[in-house]
Length: 83
Image (cartoon, rainbow, N blue to C red; front, side, top):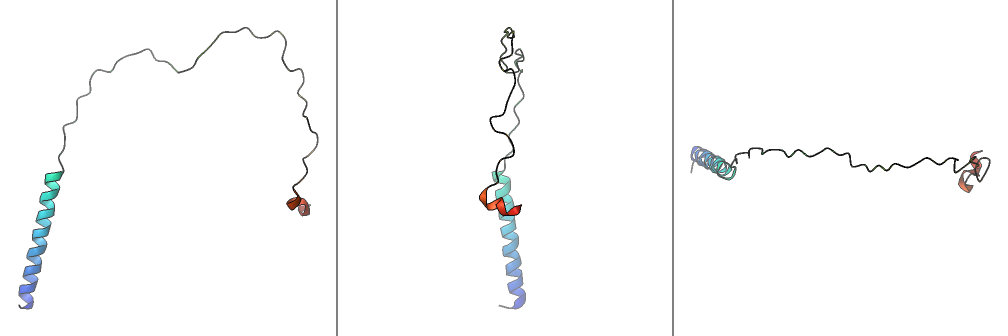
């Protein structure tokens, strides 16, 4: 076989492969018709919250908030040298 015959054979095989891939793509990709939207049911809108009505207490439950510890917390041992 000459060089020209090999090139023609390779081109024919390439065109055949491309035609086959195109045919398979068309055969496997079908577009379905989109379904028409039906009527949307209208229901009263809710926010998902639950509310209960109560009476506020006459006196606050906590008079003054006082922390249980005072001053800055001590540094961890690995940071003691940073000062």
